[in-house]
Image (cartoon, rainbow, N blue to C red):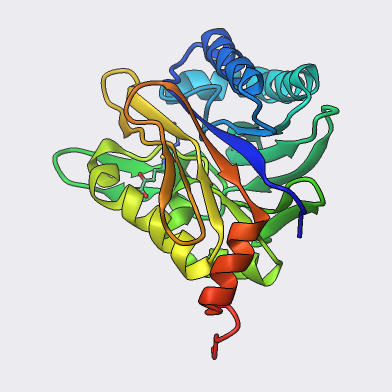
Amino acid sequence: MFSSSYKAAVIQMNSRTNLDANLEQAYNFIEEAAEQGAKIVGLPENFSFLGGLSMRMKQADEIAERVPEFLSQTASEFSIYLMGGSYPVPTSDNKLYNHSTLYNPQGKELVSYNKIHLFDVDLGNNESYRESDYVESGALNPTVYEDENIGSWGLTVCYDLRFPELYRKLMEKGSHVLSIPSAFTYTTGKDHWRLLLRARAIENTAYVFAPAQTGTHGSDRRTWGHAMIVDPWGNVIADAGTEPGVAYAEIDHKKIKEVRSQIPSLEHRRL
Ligand SMILES: O=C(O)CNC(=O)[C@H](CS)NC(=O)CCC(=O)C(=O)O
């Protein structure tokens, strides 16, 4: 367990198909968060490129080269932990991993995770998604990073949020904070996002840290926003609303201890 509380920042972006513009938007919000004293800052799913699938495939090598450089330099420039949302990393068979990552204040990558659950759904009204057409599911390897400064962070991405068994595995590895960078659709977000985030926090007595995408991304994509931090009791302690921006909350080891002693449900598990 870490020993002090710290300020965390979730970034909400409106990423599109211009890598430079997206990185600039991310940089400006990270700078703002660092100036506000955040020790850890998180970017949303596909912060570097959203929409424009064929363009993304063409630029995938460039994105996969530039984004880690950007994350490393920015984390060390502002001396913060940086959760790099997710970005596409080409696989050997011409697909992508939806890759999430965590950097330390010296700009070193600490841990990374490839999204396991892929968003293949038909929502009606001509709204459907086939993430598995271009993304390869990651290894079934629940991924946690821990140190004495930030505690134990479990990495997941977006649609993973709907699979509580993944979070149970992360809890078995001692997570204090569940990271869920997202680009939830407007259609599902309005009914499911807040409820699912609060449920994961309550059932795991852990913080939920969820940067998000918001607004429209080209003509066929609309995301819900409401980047959020939820405390282990299930209270929403930061909500970025619907505009791009940054939302802040304190992550406090005392709160985790308090809730886990009030309701030791993790210890009461039978199955
Ligand atoms: O590929 C991209 O451009 C960005 N990635 C996404 O938007 C991903 C995969 S399509 N979206 C989700 O996982 C939404 C999940 C969701 O909305 C739900 O579970 O309801």
